[in-house]
Image 1 (cartoon, helix red, strand yellow):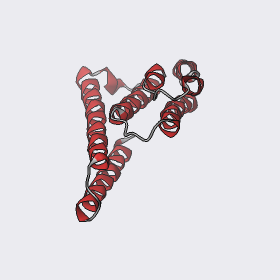
Image 2: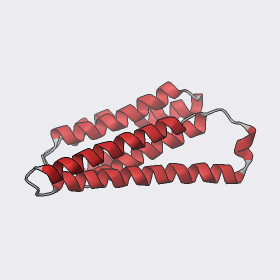
Image 3: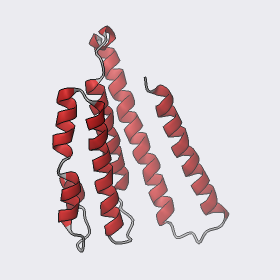
Length: 155
């Protein structure tokens, strides 16, 4: 919540961002304590909405921190759901938990990398044409492939 408000453009009213993000810790902790996925979903949606509001009311400059913010949001969601899912005997094996954590971290890094590549493409001085369309097609294909991979891997 604070990081998004602190990264706001100088002309942006930080109170709006804080108003959107203020309930996040309470909602997230309630979801974790009650093992309620609806509250976790609400907290993640509020975090995403806060980022969207910051981008909507800010200036038109590309946000170079957006890929990192997206990776942090994905990591928060993955760890939150991981913490409330039913415990099975296999999770007592340290290698399995380490493998899953490694996959989650790699997925976040890959997502940040794809986001950074899209940010570079969006900020490039190409005046359109085939190279820019190709970059957009590759970025969209990569994003869809990543979402399909994550959807297929989720239990």
